[in-house]
Length: 279
Image (cartoon, rainbow, N blue to C red; front, side):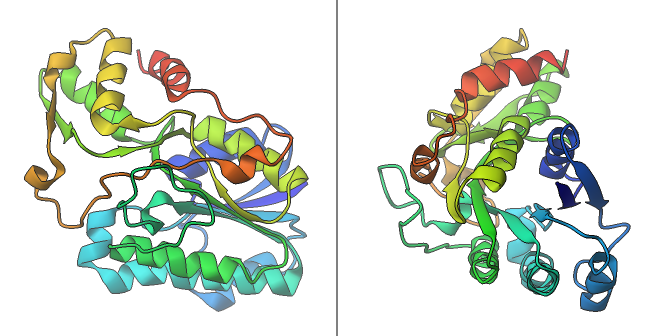
């Protein structure tokens, strides 16, 4: 299978490239090589590529930046996706799109399933909903909603905390933000399997079991041999962020359970593997 991959210099893109390249021919499409907002450039780059599948994690993931610069967010997260979807329909390859738990409103107190209505309170979340709608129009499509990411290749929530603690600094995190955690390498393996064996549709994807940001940071500290006392949990409202965060965004992997594939391992097991690489 020949697989195009956007965002290869990003956190998830790095993990996807590492996993997919083991078994498939990968065509990296980093931003420095291809501006996804330029439709003509996208078509020129893909018309003779003979892709079977395009995996698209690229975009602006910074929820606060998206709130401050909505036009830039919309171009990167929606218009770029539109161009790729148009190319997929024209050149007949499948699309796997990386979406987010930010499409929900965070007002539930039980896990979100794929069929729950979306109601994002942020510009970032709205851009992901709009992009999902475009991807749904591609005949062969898979939409993967993921949560807080950790993994190799780029600074992330876990690595940032361990670095701060090792430097003798406090790591201030939300104590009341509960969701799912996603190890990029585990998620990439599932995405590869789903796109080869499972029907088109929306899939929630994370490591198993819910956790708060505080629990995730504390467990990472413990695994790194550091004191959890350096992790300071405060209410989300006290952090005074630009964009609102979802208080509850745990996702149930209902669609994945309908396949023959195994659910990802617990976030604790995945975190232990990842933290061991940071020593």
